[in-house]
Image (cartoon, rainbow, N blue to C red; front, side, top):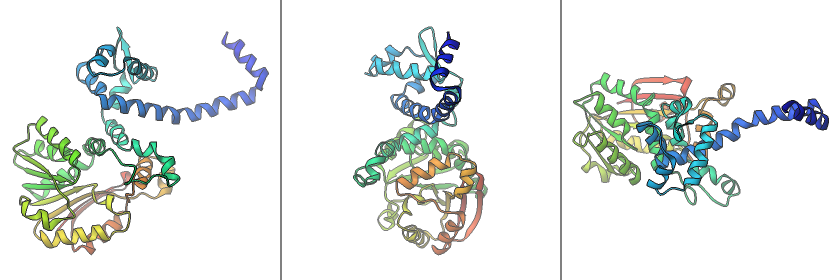
Length: 347
């Protein structure tokens, strides 16, 4: 039957044109499917279904929908789609993770959570393009998802590298600037039973997420987090605990859209206010566009989302110029060009 249908189409379009259409659709499909897959995964991550499946095994969709006040029709439609692309699999009427879904819920999980934080930005691309809406006025990131995704991705490289540097320098207490969901601080305490950790973030939602995660990890006595603004050091200094080092993980690049002056001024004030406290910085280092074009890693999407939300990525050399202008000396640095990330111990 399929051969007869193909021959009918060949007579209508010709073999060359038919093959051309097929190949073009196949080439475009990953982009369409990527969008649909991301959108449905966002919904299931936010409702907790994928975490429930990963924790407890296959789930009855109708029971889950009733328990969480969800539409069983919509949920089933989403799950059937994910079964079709082998992210989920149906066994005895229940939905569990397929091998691909298992992989997605491990290292790449942070990519989906982080991208979900930019969902509103992507949805409003056309109004932003037409100057009908602007980021920071009518369009915003979902800060809790950004914090969650950043924490998950941080486990894979930034946190282990910084942890190694902290241990190497023998710091017994640290304070994290822009701590997000406190994932970094939790890891530090898990690996070092003696270290004391503190952190703050200007975003109250992120701090609330951090407090929940700290409780889950049973770290209430060793980690404290609070809402504060690092750009108001004079106000915050008297309330801050004394620490050996400050840490800043992918924080400063968010304030460079209008130039480097704001960050230089902040770091200069930190150096003057806390002259004996070291500063450990982990930051994205811009990769040349031609390098990304040759090997289009996830940093293409990273650069796009940061550009759209008025964040700026600098080269390693530009970061070092900022540190020098602020009066800091580089005690140690590690640059990983292949992933566009740099690490510094400043004193």
